[in-house]
Amino acid sequence: MPASELILIIGIGLLAGVLSGLVGIGGGIVLVPALVYFLKYSQHQAQGTSLGVLMLPVVFLGFYQYYKYAQAQGTPIDLKVVGLLAVGFILGGLLGGKIATRIDGELMKKIFAVLMLYSAVKLLHWDQVVLRWIKSVFS
Image 1 (cartoon, one colour):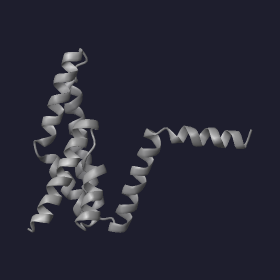
Image 2 (cartoon, helix red, strand yellow; image 1 turned 180 degrees about the vertical axis):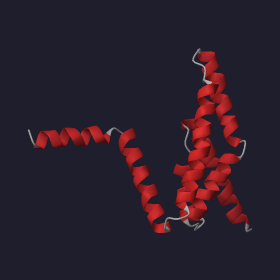
Image 3 (cartoon, one colour; image 1 turned 90 degrees about the horizontal axis):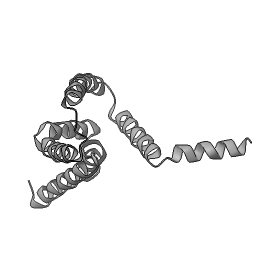
């Protein structure tokens, strides 16, 4: 592997790790697009690689920092909820992976892009702005 590619991969991982620890994102929002555009991975390769990264104990370190912080604030993270969500996540990941392998790569990109766009619109509250504009047009 060329040194430039090695540095690029480590840089992508570092950025995803920082963003994951900072705001709880990384795999889908950072790794997948970066792998597709910078390393020319297929959508399936990128999503599979992102899931592979999530298997590593790296996520645990970020979780542990939040766990300690929440404990100190008197608002502990409920480990029963974490465990139950994990069971659903494991089963959902298995089902999602089976479905994804049957979907064309270009369609996968479109589905991924729509989900990212939807998330951005909701997080920025642009949906409320659009609804207010529509109401004003028909008022």
